[in-house]
Amino acid sequence: MRYEFSEVLNDLVDYFLLGDIQLLEQFKQDNDLPDDLARAFTTGDSGDQAVRDGVILPLAGIDNLPYHILFTLDGRTPALLESGSRLKHRRGGYWLRVENGALMLFTWRILQHFTNKTLGDLLARYQEPGRPIIELDNGGYEVEVLAGALVRDGLYEPAFEFVLRKAHRPKPGAEVDVGYRYALRGYYD
Image (cartoon, rainbow, N blue to C red; front, side, top):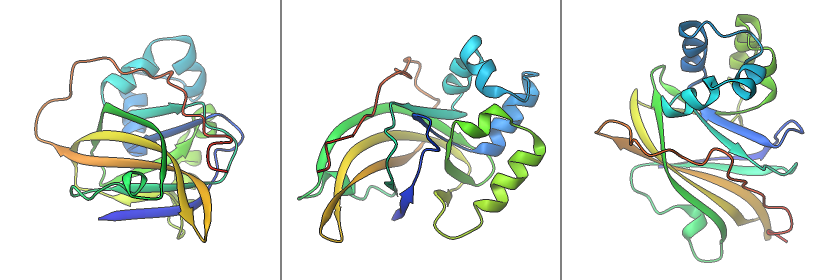
């Protein structure tokens, strides 16, 4: 199964975040973190802890472009590995938990004022068609991130693809490179 979303923007900040956003709210409460999660994540070790705990997967170096976002499940061949696609980045070893039946791609800006109201507003906006959110069974997932360009309407367009496999084992103990830069500018032309 594959889900695809077009024209996804990064809100002029060079980050995307992938995760169960309600689990992130629980993480915030459990760790008594402030509403400015962006500051907490960049000035302490809580952001690294959120990654290690499978709460979020940060993607750095995101150029300010409209992206195709794909979620590929059930062992299907990723679109960025198909003939005609241009793969630039392929990184595995990520692990995420889903505890609220959904996985979403969101931007750094939500972390700057992460309150019940802003979370509720975001969840309401994500009910609109075309938002990068998918329903998933609760549990752990191994995640491989692919980035490059796909042909859509006869043109190469920048894309990120998240290949998800249900993890029937505890999360891996290896550290992931959260600073890896997924830049694509100029690659899709």
